[in-house]
Length: 203
Image (tube, rainbow, N blue to C red):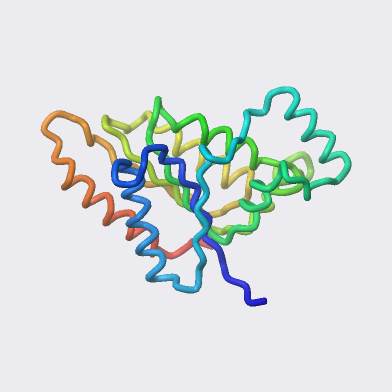
């Protein structure tokens, strides 16, 4: 069976298409990526529709028992396996409360599984993810500079823990500030998103 490289699009934009400004950035990115990488298949997932519960005690106990039994094939770890197998990853999420929506944090917690997306070597984390590149896109109504904890969290976690060497972020902000020319800002943001999609990956 013929195999295709996969770009995994983690769509945490929450608001519907046509309303979400982060979603508009993502569409520009994906359109440009598809043109420059026609060999890729794009797989879109929406964490808010995956019924993922936070890692409360019963979830932790079940996860621990399954991993101790070597059951990494269990459905509980489907999201982690999918993330680990992707060849490239795009995450899109709005800027909420200094970071991103809680549903994305839950998704990230559920994909961080020892033995699937990372392991430990000499007491240090070593990533197991196939992807060499991850891009994170977000939009904000106000000013982000100095307060973009979401981009920092995702790029540091994915590079340090999950082993994805080239992690980048694009923030388009000031969209709801006084006298903001929203369309001009968004057009420039979409241009930058398309440029990011086609930029070379650092190996």
